[in-house]
Image 1 (cartoon, one colour):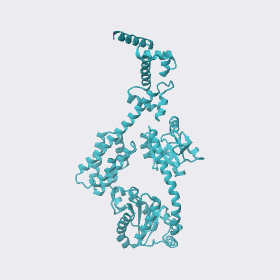
Image 2 (cartoon, rainbow, N blue to C red):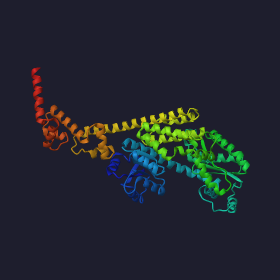
Image 3 (cartoon, helix red, strand yellow):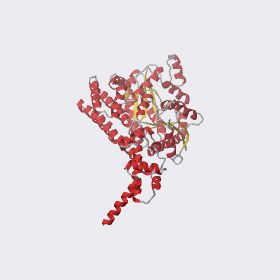
Image 4 (cartoon, rainbow, N blue to C red):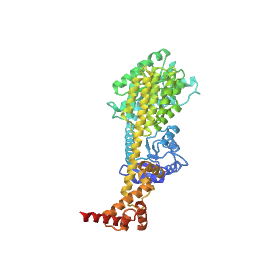
Length: 547
């Protein structure tokens, strides 16, 4: 059973979530709750949960700061944000955290339970992986000296700028490393998780596969140049070290052969980030960082040639067209649904892009950045991507070859406008559904004298103030007026179709005081309950007499 901590400054919402979910049946238990991040950290000092469900905006310490602290101190904890969609931008701009899930308020019980099932599967999978890794890592480490691997990893993670060349040569001799060439290039190889899951070995553990991949790469590289090949996190890292001529001759050949061999042997795709050439081994960390930067463009550029940082640096000189400020504005305009302003802004972006010296490859990167930004706007309001949205990435692979710039721009405009339409439709559906649910709830529980706006908003898992505004906007009546209307109509129905006494009808209609009920009834219908019943009986008798 996995443990959960719930953090939200609104006690009603915390209590609703605790009461409405069948925690034990789903394999969870609530081990603590808190109203802000500071309280949560105090509780976690003695009891660390497997899952942290937290609001974003809270007093004293918000969910962002709390998540940072938890990530630093307990990185294994799975973090789920539960907040309003307007807070999502605040989360994205404020941090870069590995948040497992993000649920938008108002959240339904089904959404919450679906999220919990997904998190449980993730935790179960990690538990199984941990058990499998113990065996395979033992076998792997027998074949690869631990101290040698540690030093290689330190080359890409630690700063050796203060170490002299002579000292480095001694270290290389001590660890018997093949890094004595006059030139170096670093290859950073990562498994494409999407194609891995679709491959014939996709049912195997990704962590187990990385060791086989590293061994395959080592065999290929050893045929051409001297090198060191090792595993770091989920990636295979290759440091080529040879003569300047060999490095220049074989780097492209190796990238192509590694790609082709992995596809043939394993059946999945990989990304290869290629650093710049460098002379000093102490610059390996910088080379690794540049290979990571190159890998970040793998999705945009695609192909089997690898991504060279030298190419990306040339592209980046033109990237000021679409910086963080412009991205934030694009996302905001799509979420707000401001169509005219959006079209003007897109015209501006494309005009700036085409005014520069940009190649077809630059255009593909530019379009991919725009596409990813649209997906961000979409994801903040809709949890599941529409298939048409995802298929647009294939359009980008083709459309960037077009010579007609206007066609490309119009495609992107239409893509943005269709995204706005989907977002607005989904928002309306969710709002309409919530409004209908709340009205139906009143119609079902109107006889409860304690029924209140606060009680119903708690049931709907949203704050009373937001619920009040939403209810009136969608139903055309305030909560109080709607409740009075339902109670009065039901009371009149009982009055005319039963022989119940007035005080009984009052109780059935949610009123504990008969006199107050009669006052409200007369105010609503203009006549007292007795008068309306008497008039109805007279009219009925008159009709029966005539017939």
